[in-house]
Image 1 (spheres, rainbow, N blue to C red):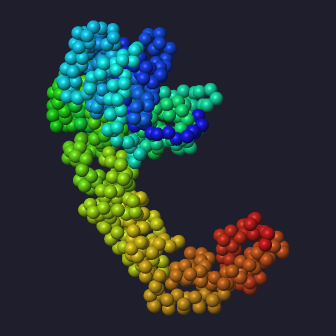
Image 2 (image 1 turned 60 degrees about the vertical axis):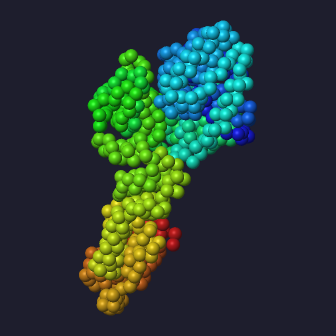
Image 3 (image 1 turned 180 degrees about the vertical axis):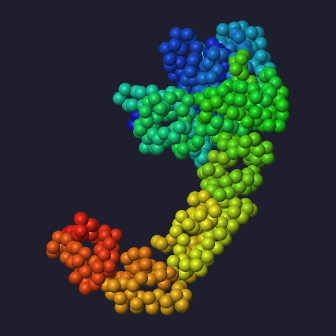
Length: 620
């Protein structure tokens, strides 16, 4: 699966839908030359069980991806998996059967997924007389009318090729009207429908890319947080430099166990937490039974499915054909983003009842916040961004995080941010302006107090500065950085301080100089002093060293005595307390203090009653 030359991106993903044995696979095979029934069982039984995929080049030169989804009722789950991510439909109705129950259900699923553009292929017209074909065509027209969908109906034969030219032209019109793939996506997503080991290649994952792009060498993440690397990319069976939205994609991956990558997984360009709760706009089909609070349904999203409990916050039930805000509590987590569509089916009987559009994939409140959900539905970033930023006032939020939350691209977020009242951009982290200003004032106040209380050491450590803001680390760092850029604070190796904090008060300076003179005069017999501001200032300036809790010595004298200790150890191999006492001409008390200082400085270590040099000082 080596990389190959780039090709024109997929313009459209078209899902073929319809009842079993109505000729979907035969039609796709005629149009593309590809047999999308890839399982032996499918050939034996004559029906599609799992989605099949083929690439089609239209008369205008545009490339589209055809998804041949199963038509048998038992395989509706796979039909949903295939239809998710589809841009338009090719609904197949056989002239000898007309519209059947699964035809209606497939069209319902497509509507739920927001796919309302397409073409109807009336297949097998050569197998019936004109009257029967006309009745089937009328049946299809009534189906479309009942759903409010407008689509051309074209008679076409997958056996003889009749009508395929007109069908291809109609598909070309759909592709021409479809906007390009979502390259400025918040996250790249590839729902995995197959994962298998290929001899000579290794682990391969396949799916239809929803958003973003994937190149060889890319690092991807699973919903459970595992990391893998892409070694090669194929689009519709051909090596490619990159996979683009809508492309049928196969990835040669490494760095993950085969058991950790199965159908139903989703591969992501960045870690995204899987959700157990989704707030959605739920819609019931006209044919569904009323839906009451607390009902359990089966939820389908991409290549995943799980049971979900429906919570209705503002209504006791949803009537057929109606809609309502709802919270879906999932039995198993899945990765969903705002704007995603989910399909809902009843548990018994197993029929499609409706679906929903995800509004909030990471609810933070115990009950749905109806005002927040209404704002999400509006899509108005000027209203949404201040609300979103206020949800995490102590942490701030990045454009990437906002794009995941608001179903907007990072580019749209960046374009909407300037000029929004109440939001401050702190170097790529958005924060409530009032919260950031309060944090700035806290920081400056804390620095002022430190400078007043400890003029010899007016800095706050980074950790202390963060704590002073009252914010989380990420936003605190952004506030500190902004204050530094504004010249309000100074950041150095020792920490954060006010710009003029290094100016030592005259009285303290005089006291420090007097103490320094005392230490120089004391020499090898340093005095006991109070470790107050003057002492700490001398230590900070490296003019003094602290031998013990109360003993302070001149730095030059300390360097001299440590050199004496090293010289004796190098020539004699060791030094005793008495030896140092005699060498520097002082008492046992001071000799003991100097040896302990040498130990703490890492120059010597004690062995019995003597000191020897540590390894790093033995060479010199």
